[in-house]
Length: 91
Image (cartoon, rainbow, N blue to C red):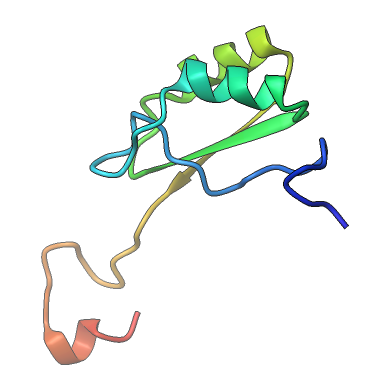
């Protein structure tokens, strides 16, 4: 079993300063802290954007940890402009 204290543990839901309206953590600080904790990898899953992916990838390389790049998105079943309560309430 992998726990947060294990070097094999990796948070897969992480927002950085590039996460739209949701991020606070700076990429350099995150990667250094993960490396200092002995973590072998770190993920980034910002909301609706991948602006920080290259900076994150490079920072992980400098810290000697494996980068896992992702994004958290939302999908509209029809169109992002269509909003009908009864139709769009059940994603």
